Length: 236
Image (cartoon, rainbow, N blue to C red; front, side):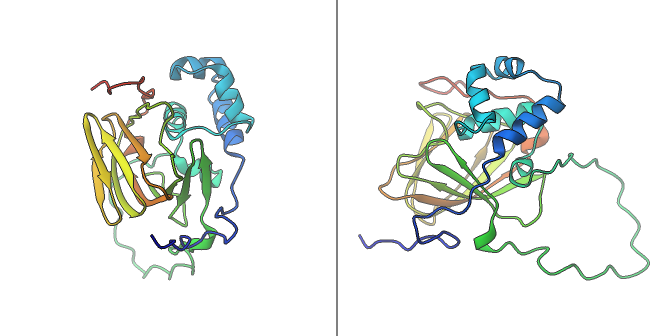
């Protein structure tokens, strides 16, 4: 099989864009602002205080499942981890009257995200998220996702669930997506969508990195934390 060229926006040295390593610090700051002790957060999530402490101090990276559990429990958006800014969920208000004057032209670059300057997060198990929006969007997670060989959304065959709905398009490689008791293997060009409240797991089953575009909408619709499922079949 011919070698694939590196995805757009990656360096020639192997592949990694500069990573923002202050994710743990942002989680800790938000936890402290919420007046929530490290031990209490650990109790709510069903994981050890030392595991959260290592994430907050940057000694370890969270898995996809652990990160989703943390940000859901703390009421954070993923944008806060990428950009470091707080974005409250906007309230629904009545539609404003049409403006009397034409709106000014938007500043250049407001809508465009260049491939080489994406905000990114490296997670445990060889998973990397790169934000595809130039501005923070608390209503949706629009991501360029890379799963290294053997990479998975959670360790030890665990499952993840959270509010919202997911849409994915595989660009290259092969990835296995398990949703409840259904299992699918995606190849380049294949796409999938499913309810995120159903326990699910993503895993690279190929011999090269798997690259996909992933979109999650409605994740902030439910602030309850969904802890990772134990080993074995998902609890439905």
